[in-house]
Amino acid sequence: MLKFLFAVLLLLTSPLLRGQVLASHPFATELTRALDLEAGATATDVPHHVHYTLKLYSYRHKLTTGTWDIWRDPQHYVRTDIVVGEFHYTHIDDIVHKRQWRHFDHVLPLKVFDLRQNYEKPEVPVALFGDRKLASRSTVTFQQVDGSPFDCTPELLEERVCFDPIAHVLAFAQIMNQTITWENWQPLGTHSVPRVFRIYDGDRMIVEASGSAEEVKTFPPNLFTIPTGEPDMGEPENDGSAPHRIIDAKPMDIDFQYGNVLLHLFVEPDGKVKKSEVVDADDDDLIGAAKHFVRDLKFAPQIKSGVAVPFDEFLYVLHAPNIGDTSQRGSS
Image (cartoon, rainbow, N blue to C red; front, side, top):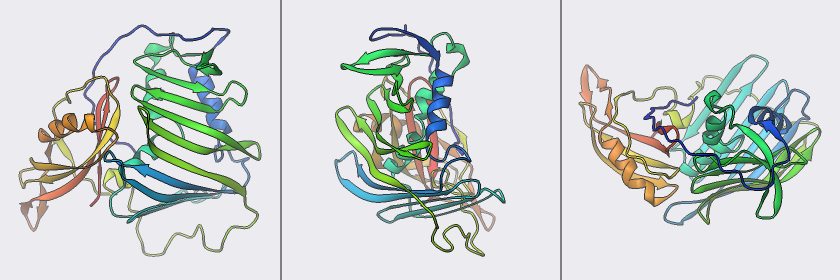
């Protein structure tokens, strides 16, 4: 699903272990166990519905609320609905017939992008500690963090992932200036669901999903029915099924900070970016680097009736030092 532009920045630091080390386990093993315990991970899960209320804060501290619903009929169907302002997203996954249908209106809000990027697992530190070159450092050990017990990776590039040492589910992840937390896990059959999921930028909460899950005996009629005659639109962060293609880019100027920025780009007929406007950012300190990066992008021309025409584009820019910069686009 993800399409990335890479500008690799190689940074090497010594791993920092905090707390008392009692035993070590491979990170990949701990992560797999944690993911297997999440609701929806296996066919043995019970049919259920998860409902979250969303609180999303812009870089200007404006609060937007919404809802996120997940309906799962294991081995058969999964349906996801997200409603935030004018953005409405529905995804029906027909597991039996291996068919997906996605529909959305308007631009995917940046904080929903953040939520989807990290809820199941924090993608950036998972990529870091999953790197085979770091196998000797990609271990999980018992540690005391602020007086509480966790099983954590070492702190590397100001990143780490920590698990609950008893329940073996995800507890929190640190990605430089951001902290991601999974809290108050609710049992659901042999699996579990976090009742609260949060993302912080420094001390400021930017995303909160709070709710609960319930077992479902009978799903509402037609809940998993794919509408006839309506094509799959693809994912909103990839500009649906027909993205504008980036054909040239220069590396981003990167400092030691993490986060996403959503920009609205206005592109000339020759594919060069005329101007960019900030829609939202995880941190306003990331905006300058993101705007400088998109100035040097070049898109494949958009042709209508044999003539190149100007167009606009929404682009999600990820600022992450250990993997460089990555970009995704969204539909207007």
